Image (tube, rainbow, N blue to C red; front, side):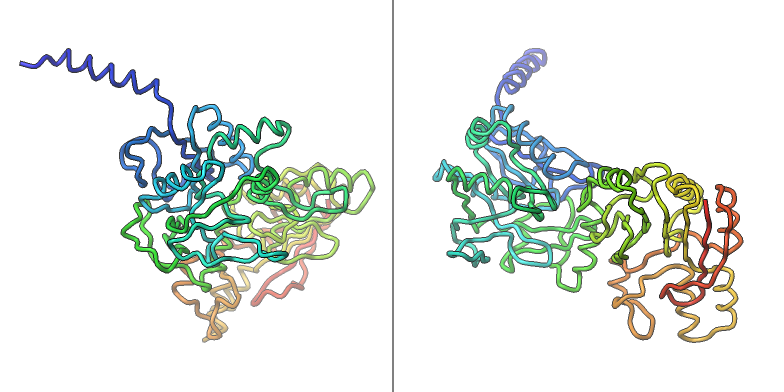
Length: 461
């Protein structure tokens, strides 16, 4: 009869021994939100979505940080792990099952190189660039090739730890990755530099090759829908995922994908993430400060746009979370914003705006008039009634809306609707402004270009 106690003792010895074994490869994943489900699982030993059989491995991730901060943190973790390789995989990147072993074979054959698979930009081309003389072009990335690349993304990249150690020793004062946008340089303003540009430039300077094995074809997936961009040759049977791939993305999906990308950026990301300094300098110079809250894609000369969802905003921040100095602004404009906010949080944002305005500062708001829209609805027919309904409940009146006023069902599912979370009338909004402390409240005809019945409210602090 076997002894259970002795069996457990042996098992404990095996487990204890395993804890002394370093990972051969560390898989690292920057995450925008750890509460979301990533496309694939790389953590642990059960249910892994790529083949790591026979290799000790580890996993680390970080959520909610800007991508350069995240990558630097993960690289530092890998340096301390004792691993030979670091494999970066994006949270929305799907690798084929044999990806690691294919990349590993190439890396072992080219020990002084970094190796990556083919990774696509959603709704666009492979993020693989080669240099031809003075030109940068995108190469043919059909399977069966090993390409010397000039630039690639980092989301399917196998990096020898020895290269990271050497880079750190060569320039300990430099991060591996860094993002810059409109940085004042010695020769003028430096436009956008991505974290991958920064890292790969450092590779070029030290003579490290960047190789692309085109037998590793990644899917770049939208986590909400399972839609993806990839090489047309991919066979989905070779990919194991947490989220089922649905169909390839097309150009018809681009607006939706762009909105998804912007909506999921970490707080503070954007062209003016240094906005506190910008506002401080304007205050010190005595310049007029006007904010356009929820500006969307519209830029108005003389106004600082604030909008979490717009890449054209000077400040890409949530209206509830953006930190602005008290009594710094001469004017706040909020055109068709308040109806998109939860009613129970409206007093919060109005109080915030009141605090930001200087004494005598002006608040200007335009929004649908719910009471008048309801009256209109009762006497209208056909298209007029349809548009009034859309203005009550909220819809994006863009090219996504057909001439007859209807919205394609697929477009609707992808987020064309911009719902109104509450309806306001001149009285209810006026009462809220008065309760917060505004005075000289005026109700005027709307001047914006929104359809149906709207009203303008102007008030003074």
